[in-house]
Image (cartoon, rainbow, N blue to C red; front, side):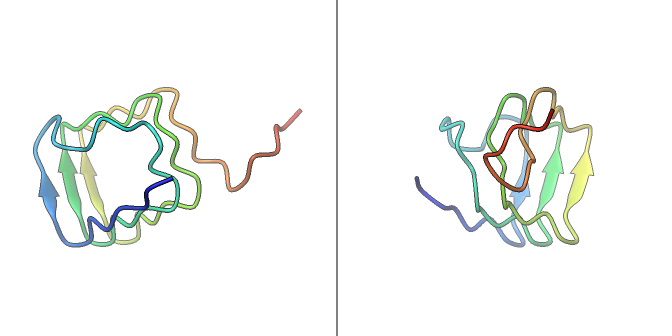
Length: 70
């Protein structure tokens, strides 16, 4: 798993890496506008103070761990 540091960066649509696994990555103070996070793995990802404008996160996994909730 590759962990990315995108802190304080701006992302126009479809600039993120194609890898669906962004677990543990850092988007601190990043700006994501019109970007798709649909279906991505985002466990433990830091979105603190990030600006998410028109972001599609349908089916994204923000769960804190791998345990399935019932």
